[in-house]
Image 1: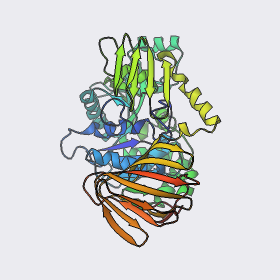
Image 2 (image 1 turned 90 degrees about the horizontal axis):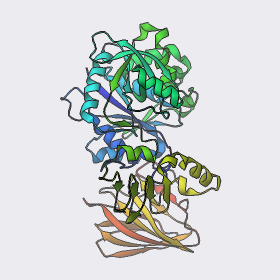
Image 3 (image 1 turned 135 degrees about the horizontal axis):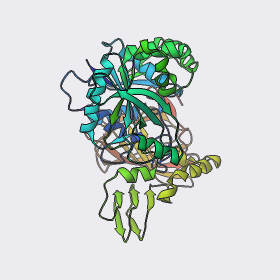
Length: 482
């Protein structure tokens, strides 16, 4: 039996705004440690014996996140992952169907399906639950993991479990999924001992899932099958047929299959494995405070933070020193272009701020000042009338596209590393503290031939400085001409 991890990373939620943006959502952020939530999810199966876990995770995501996901996995030593690109979002059931189609021909492994944006504090307890779930899944069961509740929570859906499963250590029969309850109902659920929080984590063999989706949602099975049959390969990426996939119904794993299993026992038994491992879906800033390490006064911090006379407060600082004085039960989030201050009881209302910013056409919900590209990233340090200053970092061995601009000229100063510059017909090297000038309308390219990151300061000047003023002639990453 081999376990294949399937990581669902297509979400673009902004409930953790301003740290999370649509182009750089929470799963790509380091919220609880040095690793991003995606990296923590991918690393959660390290430590199993050789052969028990496929070292290549299978990630289902969208076009926009593909390069940063590949880079983050490379940073933790996971090379050549399989990354399936969804052309449109169709919820978790079609995403899992694509993953199962990709995996079924590789020995029909047991799939461990995990959202990319959850926190699990006790990895050892998680792995023990995975071992139990994998044994049941290998025998044909469809397994979900129910979080053992420690409070009457109204923000989660629940799973009702029945009697102990035959031959299992702790697993129980899956009876039903229930919607988010009111507080009184949640208290009754927790007191009964029959209910668990719905984690959104599942295990089953690839072939078992495909049979189930064919039985319960043949239109989805057909659309995903046709989309995968029309796939093309592009480095680590699997691109599926967009027209076929757009015809797939949109549904979750729960609704599409899991809650219907009682009607078709021949497909496999629905099983709940209890999980008590410090789980959180980090659905809002108060949830991040709850799972973060705290000082004696209950304060949690990330970045350069000073507390004075504060209690039970979370401060998340991205770049500047944040001093929290006399703050009780507060959340303060600092980013280079936005600061949010909220009472911990009102962090869910961040969605109202995001909605207002979208209605006003503000880009603050879409992207950060720091923007990731397949070759590295840039940070827009300053801007004014007819000028913009960027800090650009190019990964070792990477290069920008061969391009030109109609409306701006650029000055480049090398701060660190060695730059290979193409300017018109010339190609030359620049060392640290050297510079060059790229005239308006001049074909040019920047590359890093070295083994350390290349860092430059770029000063743009001209009548229009938008990112769409790019004409690409060559590009290593398959991006269009404009």
